[in-house]
Image 1: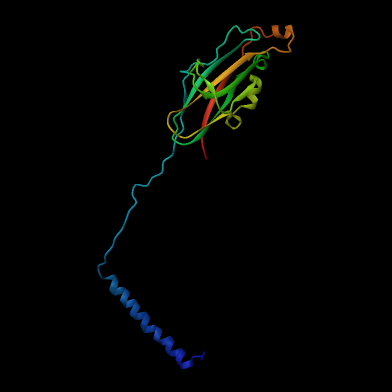
Image 2: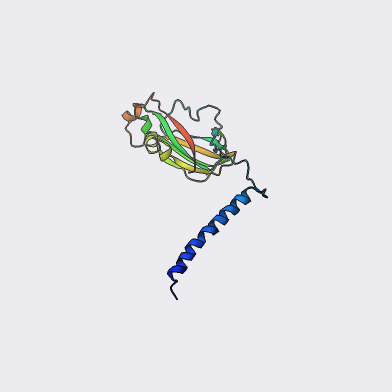
Length: 203
C-alpha cells in the first residue's frame, strides 16, 4: 500500500477541524428542538422481612407434673406445635433449665417422637414419623440437646401458615442396676426440665 505523502497527511489533519465544528453546531441545534419521549415504569418496589411464629396447644400447662413416682413407673404425653411462619425454616427440640436432685436426673429417661395426630395430654391417634430424640436420662438430654444448634427431632417447615407437628414424649423411672439403698435414697427427690421447640428460618 502506498504511504501517504506529508502533504496528504497534513490536509487530513486540518480537514478534521471544520467537521468537528459542524457536528457541535448540529448538537446545539438539536438541543433547542422539541422531541418525542416515552417511558415505562415498574412501580411500587419494596422489601419486607418474613416472620417466624411458633405456638403449641399446652395452654400454659406443663406436660409432665408427675408425683409419687415409684421405680419402674412410666407414662407419656403428647403436644401439638403449630408454625405460623411466612418463610421456610426448621424446628428443633432441645432442653433447658434442668433442676437436678439427688441423682434422680440420671434415672428419669425421656424419649420424644414426632409425627401426626394426638393433642395435648392425649396421644390418641398419634402416628410417629420423622426424626426423634432417643430414649436417654434427663441429665444426658440436658447436655446432648442443650440449644438450637444441638437440638433434635428436626421438622422442616414450608413457610405456610398453620403447619402442625405432633410430639409424643415417653418417660420412665429406671432403677436398673441400683442397690436397694441407692433406690431408697431417691425417695422424696424431684427433678425438673423444660422442653423447648425453636423455629429458625432457612438462610
